[in-house]
Length: 458
Image 1 (cartoon, rainbow, N blue to C red):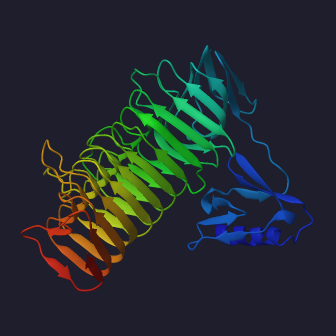
Image 2 (cartoon, rainbow, N blue to C red; image 1 turned 180 degrees about the vertical axis):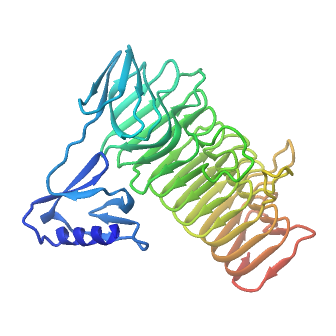
Image 3 (cartoon, rainbow, N blue to C red; image 1 turned 60 degrees about the horizontal axis):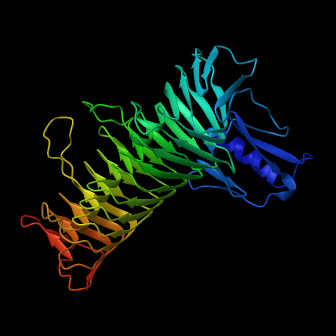
């Protein structure tokens, strides 16, 4: 019903069948205005969960209303100014208290029924915000730049859903202290959902750059996120302990946006504690220059149905994408240069543990993703690991898509499958250059079961 009403109303204003000059699409504590006479485009996506209007994308589930008068929203506004900070609380907001020590702000919210808006703006090279509560909240980054000298720059401790919006045309920066007990420069104890057409720059000087307990989601409307460096992972989600059951709440979910990431000493993106990676849109540009790290790592399963992943794997024995259980590649593109010693472009890992909390994975299913990898790394001298485009510890299934691997080193492998290779459709093309001979290697006990598709090794 909501989709039907929304579609009808948007078409009404788009075709200028109203006396109003402008209308406003409202999402909780924010609104975007459009002049009716200037509208050119309105389109739903295939499953009607999103729509685009003049270049702006919205998720239908996020829309509260469409109105013809610009609304206003009560907020808690925190403004930093060098060595000081001020907090303004709208009179209608109850149960929120605060303390300020220099430019370090501590806010406590007692509400258990009302979602509040927090607006962050201004700049400090020795400031931070710690927000404690027990209810969901929305936060607008309205041109805020915080470098903390004592811990996390932004620490949200509510255990609930936190919507973090980068306001359009703003640049926002967070960096933490070089030592401390915090888990990240931007830490959220809860479910973190990022959106908005602004820019966010984050540096993790103690551990992670961005960390969310449970899931971390980049929504369709996300702008640009630059992870400039991290002592551990660039983006990390996890509950902090291994679970006895599937950790379905631990997920990295990417629906949109552009993420540029480099100088991470752990993984670029890590869904920990048997967590899941789910990518359906957006662009990841990942520099994997650390030793024994990964660009995208899931403790359990990787699902990819859309989006673009661009990899530059120069770190020794590192991986572009790594899953602890299985991987399903159904759409999108993966492009990568794999040059580190013993590095892998894609690795489906068979877990070595036998406890009930670890599934016996290691399968990879290629059903629609377009993959183009160039492999030029040599053998890693410490453990004699070989550089490979794709390494599958168990069975590899190809039923769609296009896989093209170019091997440029005589010691490298194009595709290495330990058990069975099952191809029913799709295209596998391996190009051998510079004396390379190891295009497709299947384990001694494995079988090559090709019933369809195309395969070229040249």
